[in-house]
Figure 1 (spheres, rainbow, N blue to C red):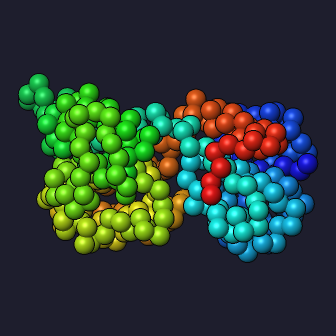
Figure 2 (cartoon, one colour):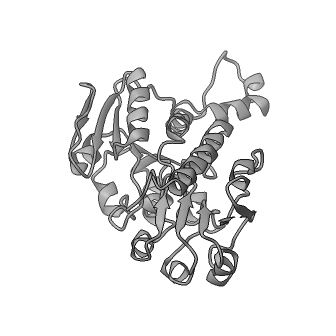
Length: 319
């Protein structure tokens, strides 16, 4: 059985592939062009198993990969694979839904705390000598905010959002959430609301939904207009959930106080992305998922998924 991993670089800078090598004829590529179907097909042409992290597998690729029986997505989001096409060709697709829950929730709060506490800015100012030059024992160059009693609105209420809710409760925040289907909040301090109500009430909005045709550009000029003036937005989900031109305009006219995002629509970020010049915009390079512990877990569950498939009892199947 031939196993091909299309994009191992982001994962294996400090890991190894011995567990995958033990399962078959294993071939790993550091990178595969996301825009070159010919290259993708050449690499997976005789493979029964393909593992991908961010390399897209669309209808044109899946329909021509004659030996392909299994696609393992090394991640939670599955927008990189045409699931309908895979189903039509009787190809099993699995993902890793829970490997980074704690890490992404932690990073979500890291972004929020950076906005409200301005640690990075003031650390740099101190090192630049500003504290040494002031007359008082203290100074601040940007407003600082207390989270207590602020309302956090979570769009989506899966595992990561629920973990973020727990962290928010520890900071004595009020927590509301919107979910596309009714959910029963396990804690009395969390309330489910409509999307419009969330936009109207939330001081901080954090995105935790998957990318689908319905959620692309969910945050746009119209939905932004429904939000409180001075709202803070956090995005550790997918870049395409936000219209970048619309949010840049809202940042520049101060309708939105700040955006902190770990993701953008086109990654790596392009030099002309409007967010790069927008006011009060914090951008990190898609690293919320990347602590060593989470990547070790990701690899382990990817191997477990493949072993389950080989034993005839596939798990974490996307349909």
